[in-house]
Length: 147
Length: 300
Image (cartoon, rainbow over all chains, first blue to last red; front, side, top):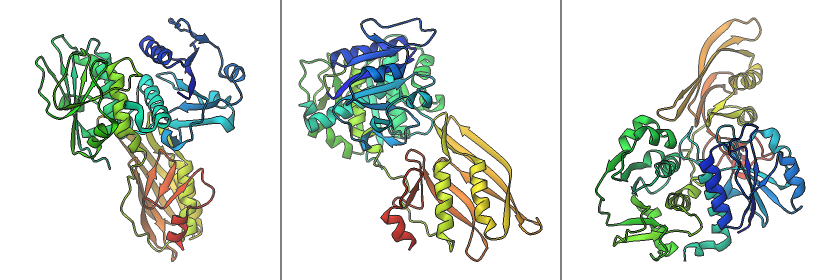
């Protein structure tokens, strides 16, 4: 799996956070959580950070950042994923503000969306991450992922 | 377009209604009206309001597709999603053949006990919950391919207009696409002020009179209406009023021919790629500096 880190930017729903942490644990992906100011729940055994900028400078220089956002102007299938990926998913209600994305290194960052067939719809944050991970699995293992 | 026109999902014995609801949200967001039925098999009491809230499917549509039964339905062909590792999964080839079929039924089993003959079995083994495995299945079968779907197939004939002016207009429109509540909209002022530059070349002046942006949440449609008054540039004599329409995909606008006559032009807006297109292959993007070969050959 070429996804090494997942940053949860101010997610608020406990079930979403727990499910993501469980999936990532299974796939040996490190979770970094940026809590809201008023967070009532903070997951255990994950790295907590206050700021994206702080996280970026703590990671290796060869990490590429993939931000899953509805305002992305490329599809996930249209980018080169790279070997050392950090996926960033945003809060269920507000997503990730563009000002936060500007803190990421421009030459190593993609803001992508997952295609939808219905205007106005959106995917749940856990399912968006699952689709991202499935895309990585497809590319890593080609068609052998089910065998 | 997707070949599967009818997708049926049967969800067996959900422990927590959140999970079938999240799967329903994914299937509806991806496939829209091609999701023709979603059946819950359960003896538990289900509050439909919870499903509506978690799935975010418009309630009229939800009432059409959702059914709840106590007894299981026999399915002779389709895909079984199960996290029970005692059940052998099918090869990817056998699963992928369903992409080509008119109709597919996916059975999601939380009990792990189903072994229905005739069904192919799917799981990646990476996601704990069968609902999430089913999301991976939908992604592999359909959602990836949505990126390849060209919505605009017909080749529109463009009236006798200055192509430089048309490209200028298309590029500015591509730059002014924004997303509001996940619906694409175009800033009415950008439409009008861009057209103003074009119309100035033909001794006319456009004035924004009124703009309405409406969202039909029950049918997932956007309806944008921009009303402009057109005046003679020299003495501001009123010529006429025109309406520019945008429905999320198609932009039907007033334009002007080389000889200065008013005409209408239909363009297609690919909001996901921030492109404005004459047809599937002839597009102008907000982020692409050079024009595509298709565009150049179309224009010259």
